[in-house]
Image (cartoon, rainbow, N blue to C red; front, top):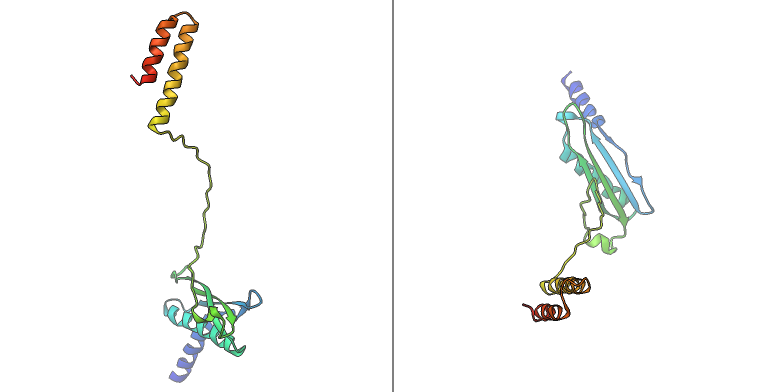
Length: 165
């Protein structure tokens, strides 16, 4: 009786881990996805190791090696979601430079891009003074043309502005 319960428990745990097997994504690119439906009795670490082992065995069956491209996992949330592990890999020759030193790049789940244009008016003190000087000269000239100041007053004020006083 105990043996039957033990065998049943082992079979239930084996059935609890659903796997997709190697799914071809491209000419040499594959993915294996596995869900651990064991709940709190599951083992996410063992599930990941099994997926990686399966990928390596698959590549070896083709006389090649598996090079990891990306991984994605979701943790167990009791009562809401089972733990999952997705492993994307490329099958290459053992002499391929990718096989020598694989590079696992973390990619974001969501990418938010924002682009906008901003205009900034940057002026140095010197250019601001020149702008102000020009504006003041225009005002003086306007006063002269309206007859508010005469030519001599205009010339005196202009000289003061140009001399920086």
